[in-house]
Image (tube, rainbow, N blue to C red; front, side, top):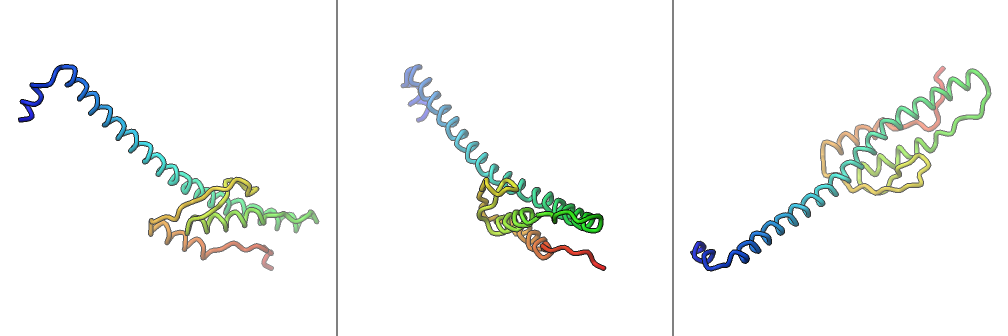
Length: 141
C-alpha cells in the first residue's frame, strides 16, 4: 500500500517529502543539543563552585598561617579573611540546597544554583560542613 502511494507521487513531491523529513529531524536534533547544553551548563557551574570551595579552604588556611606568623613577628594590622569565610559558607549552602552564591570574592556577581538530586554529592557536602571554619584563629599554646 505504501509503495502504491509513493508510485503515485511526482518526483518533486517525493523530494519535498524527503526534505521535510530531513528538516524535521535536524530541528529535533538541534533542540535536543541545545537542551543538553543548557543542562550541562548548570553542571559546569556546580563543578566550578565546588572546586572553588577547595581553593577557598586553602586560601583561608594560608591566611590563618600568615596571621599567626605576622602576629609572632611584628604588630601589623590583622588580616581580614571574613570575605573568604563568608563566600565559603554561602557557596556551601547553595551547593547543598540550591540558591544564590557569587562568582567572585567581592561577592558582587551573583549566580544561582539549582538543588542537586545526587545523594552521594549531598552526603559529601554534609561531611564537609561538619568540619566548619573557625573565624577567630588563635595559636594554641
